Image (cartoon, rainbow, N blue to C red):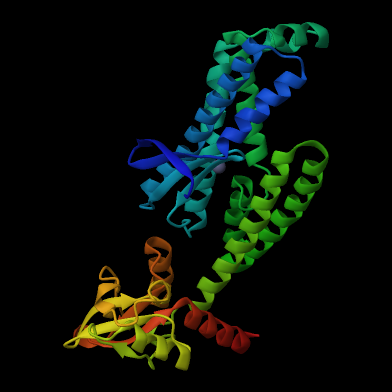
Length: 363
Ligand SMILES: [Zn+2]
């Protein structure tokens, strides 16, 4: 993720902290000062937040390591002020597997809460009256810290299990629904419920807590995005690359100049180009690179074409294109036929067009 600092690696998974995370530390100190706190109480609260986020990382590792057992890799775990995000390569499609991956995170916090329950005299705290409890909790001590961590882990379980897709509880809901209906419908229902929760969180957040507003936006956008993705994937199910590929493309030679390509860009709608030398694909020329070199009209394109690229076979499933875009970020891919001969190209724009046409045929 952009603006994130790598802090370590666990079981091959990169752990990173986003810069906005420092905002939560400032926020905690700000609240503490407002409450008339001192240096000791501020340090205590910062320590608490740091420990809390260790619990969050363990929660995310619960998801990631369970997914790993199903051969799904996790790119990284990122800490944001609103919590942790484990970027799984994809979600398991089998309901039983998604159920396990979704539950594994909160399960970690259940275990942590149980361990803390053994060390902290929770019963004593609970039996105190409000004034005494407040007195005890306002004094910075290890015991108090652990008590707060216990509460935090219980809250993490309860909050994450709210069925607000794509939060854990929402994923559990989708998995359970998927046992009874197809995944597209299950996602649609879970995402709608998620968006209703997002609206509730948003309103509550405006009244009580700005972080809840952020979580609400995160859920709302996440639910929409994932719902769209599942719908799209189901629409392209069974189709091959060749049914959505561009076949009328202009092929460039390494010796062509930037001026020549600018004429092509203006004359047509093509943006990115494939460069071929003696029937071999040698590079891809992206529009943004051409625009960046407009001043150097006589420069040969071989100087600025990207020589690191992937190609895709026309008989591959269309799904594979999305996987490649997600994994490698290459949005324009040369399509090859028998013996690796160039036959066309595929990009997001054309696949969107394909989806648009498909959706009209379905409705
Ligand atoms: Zn989780």
